[in-house]
Amino acid sequence: MIEHPPLPNVASMDTEEAATATDTSPVASSRGFYGCVISLIAFFTLFALGAHAITEFEKGLDGDGQLEQPGLSGSVSQPLGPGTTARYEDGLWVTVSRPERHDDGTYGVTVTFENGTDEELRLSDEEFSGTLDVEPGEDYAPGDDVSWLNWDEVASVLAPPLPEGEERTVPVRLKPERKGAPVTLEVTPPHPGYRETAHFQLTLG
Image (cartoon, rainbow, N blue to C red; front, side, top):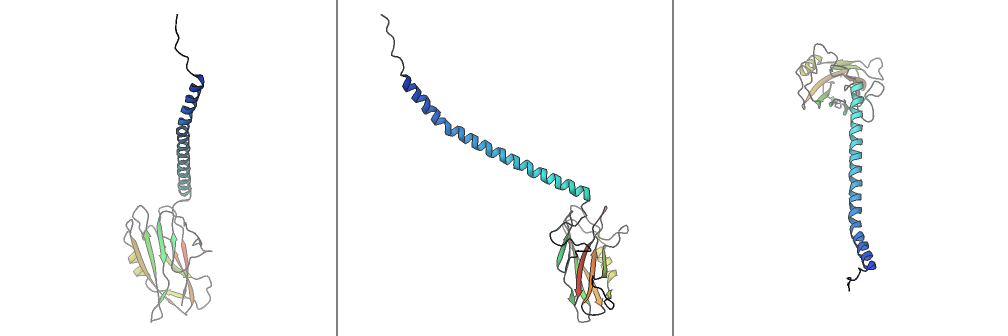
């Protein structure tokens, strides 16, 4: 007589398999969750890199001598005011101070060049001209003439190259025919391609 061992209980096997499946499901869910997170991170990283590449490409098309800043653009129709800064795409910043009145009736203004580019800048060169100029203001009227007293000193201060990461302050002395005369400072730092002119509208008095 052949004896057979008892057959396994089918119900018991089903219960064990179900328990095993139940035990492993959280692991699978966890793996799926982290996979989604990694995919999202990779997507947004690629998106950011693509946006940066497009921005740099656009800068390359219009040149890095363009003004790039919020608010007033610094153009002829939207001049900047005293104490403000013109920001160029290549990292150069130009700040014009508020006019300071002296006892002799003259006014002092400073123009500060901050070289945030990746190279040395020549603010005054024989092949470039017009780095700094003084023109009548928007509301010019007869009697609003302004004399620029130290243009030779300004040329001397601008002459040495401005190293990367450094700044230089240029003093400008002006004498108006009357108190309250408007004046525009035009700043066009040299650039091998094209540099947009920054306009600063001031009132002397």
